[in-house]
Length: 116
Image 1: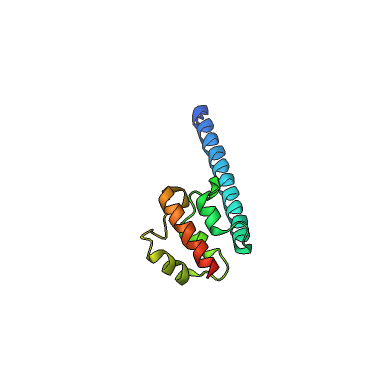
Image 2: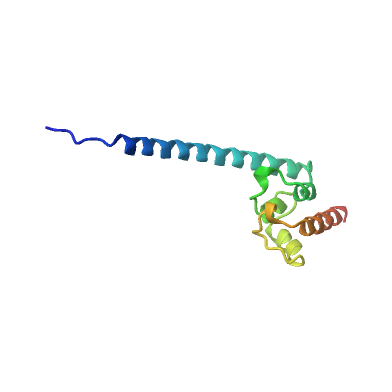
């Protein structure tokens, strides 16, 4: 039986795609682990959610605002929604896309809410 010719460039392409996919999966896992670590730290109070909003780490820039707020102690979905209701900021808005004005506004309100 004669074997069909294998296209070496196609095999190389498939191999490159697999390597790229593996790097992407590894990077996604690193981001998940870093966010989980940050979530635990915010729950412990160091750093505060206000500090993270003012200067989000690069891996947290795509993190939805609601996830950060809910990572604080005694903050659930209802409290986070009430907090965001008066700001006009969508709960799904990523941290990295907040404007400077929004960052300052949220940080100030969080600091005030923490002192109450």
